[in-house]
Figure 1 (tube, one colour):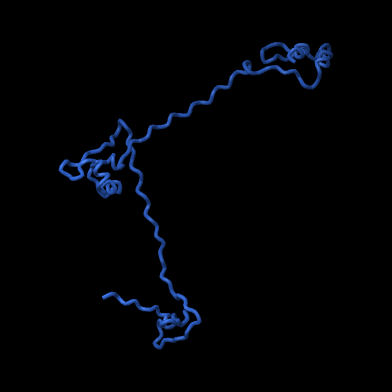
Figure 2 (cartoon, rainbow, N blue to C red):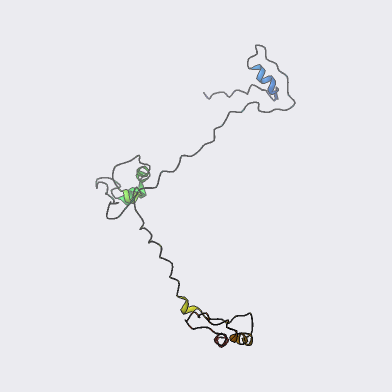
Length: 179
């Protein structure tokens, strides 16, 4: 016979008692039946939030040439006697991945192991900075005109004139030629 569902302790037919009265009635030898204006649930069971389990760790990867990740086919007497059939028609691959079935069969097909991807190559070094002589040019000063520079030439200001990036001794006259 199905189990009868009992009414909550605060409900009497289509009316309710107050939550305070319901709490007091739990230990009272003579219950109080003060009818409430509205019905409400006085106690609620605590529900623990479900946290799903963490997914299984990824299968270990195998370094080619050092270890092997291969399939060992199931016995030919089995109904599903190839790794492909094991994958398609059974739940054995899920069990192997969950490590609840450790029979040594079909590890590669079921994903129990995998080949490690090749390591990325090291980054290439940055290109070398080209020498200035290939890309630099001399620009005459923007402070004054060539006439101004030529007028200063005789004052001894250019007794040891600077060299250009091409090694040419710069004088006001040469600076004006680069214009």
